[in-house]
Length: 412
Image (cartoon, rainbow, N blue to C red; front, top):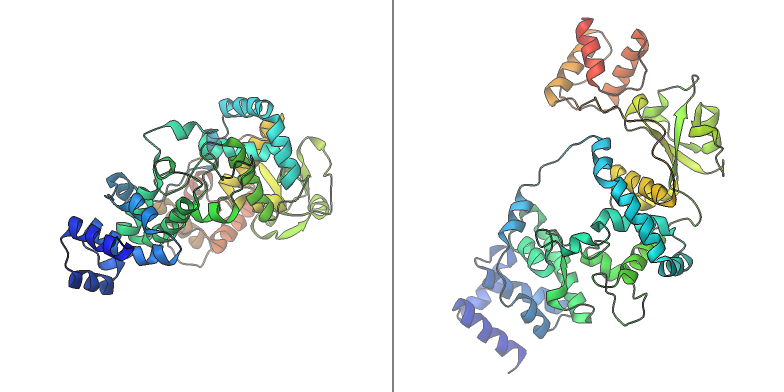
């Protein structure tokens, strides 16, 4: 039976469609497909044009039904705002540090070879492994791991704002099956399609995954060597600089101008040092000429950092300062480094939108702020906070905090 005839027979059995109905369905497009089987039929030309065979397509999607858990997660993704120390408490735990050190020893030979090939520190690769999949532990958790094909097809079929992502990643996933790197039943990942030990989405996998163990397959699910090498290969392609760290924890001297927290720009480490930013513990910067940006997520109340090139490379893996700081810090801890020199202001909580509006109103009443009262703390609000802090003798870090709000309320 030819592919076209097989397809027609398949669709008639599953949907009871006439040939005319199939044509009309194709004209209507993917977005108009009313049932899962109709959607599968309408998506076939897209997969076929990407080089996917009918045999692979039918095996992967022939019995497709949407995953209700994926739909629930896709449609209820609210912005979760936490303090950075809450995030680090989850990602850089003592247990994860200890396990990472053990795995550095267990996989020393493979990690040394990977580091030699790609120039990415083995500790950074292990830290990504730890944060992305808890060193592979989540791959054995049936409550988390799902069929990648079914998850992405669900998003493509009825994922709302995630439908485009689902379609793109589904095609990429089908191409992985077509290549033969992994069997359909073994291609598993998160509800949003992140796969294997190092949680590559399919498009990233296709572009950067490597067969480091030489068995002919790029297996990031079962081969730790392939997974870790793939992470290193990706960071290498993103511009990782050999034998350099991600950044340095720093502290401020009395001469430091806290206005630089808001608009310090990029300067050399040596220039930052002249402006009152020094490495903690009295250590010197090994390369004072490296360009760096200042990052103080808790203002003047917690750890602060000078970030160099490799920090931005880590963010290519996950575009989040929180994530990149966690990877950097976990890699340092796995290497044998200490916790941060300064502690986080754990008694602080983020202001609510209503409190931020109240903060803006009080700053405006004192003549420091003339912007909109909208609860959005941007550069104008931070500048006004800093002006007020300077006026009343508080640390002028420009941070919207409960402390500043209470001070304003007490001095109306």
